[in-house]
Image (cartoon, rainbow, N blue to C red):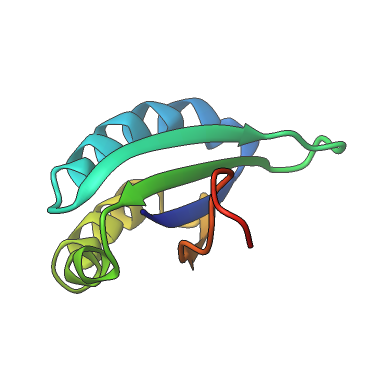
Length: 105
């Protein structure tokens, strides 16, 4: 299982409306081939600066993820930019499976 992670830094005044929209956005992403589940986490911070969220999608294969990135991601990202332009920053990364707790490194 691959992890597609999106880290989002939000202005505090945008947090509530973005969080509400994010639930709908995640449901749209999960309609993509090979996407199994998603979780959203609040990143705990020591300062009173921007609020940060971390979304992790579990994807069956790298091929499914590439298909999403090429076909659906541009449109879904554009929707977020239209709604919240200048109110957030997103950083993405892909985590490849290496081992799990039942396997040895």
